[in-house]
Image 1 (spheres, helix red, strand yellow):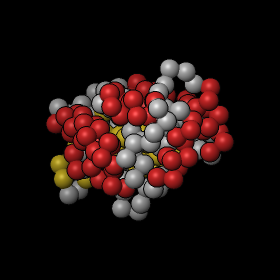
Image 2 (cartoon, rainbow, N blue to C red):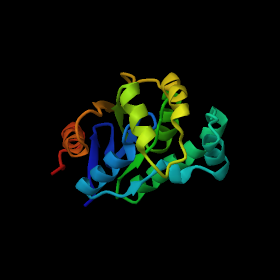
Image 3 (cartoon, rainbow, N blue to C red):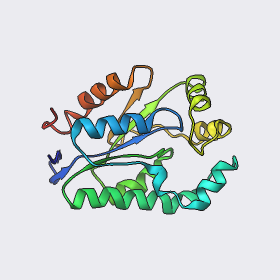
Image 4 (tube, rainbow, N blue to C red):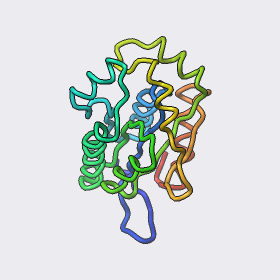
Length: 184
């Protein structure tokens, strides 16, 4: 089932969603559930990082814009391919800065950004309890410092991560319904 985004200036495009926010807010959990709920392809942004980026973050060193540029272009290419093949898709990506989101929008202009937002203490607690991830809690402050909220010129919405993942999926579907009337 290919879901589409209506835009009166452009032909109908398949639904592409970027689930964004700082590390530890639950991007992967929500994005997987949302992709399953909407029967869309899913991609995890961490899979697009080159080994040098993973090594840097694993060592507790924040990435800079130069590190992020090829990673963002790769995610943008995935979004563009999902648009061109008509499937749409859901991808995770911190997308902390407006400029980073611009890179993604250049590849997929109709992308909808779903910003997961949570308080520092809650997110830090989540990071401290997760296993098998290269992002240490010590980098959380740098992510909050870099975070630029969605602007009025950006297609998207903010969801507080307090509710359960299942509740968040239903909230996300409700937010996406005006963007795409075909949502079940």
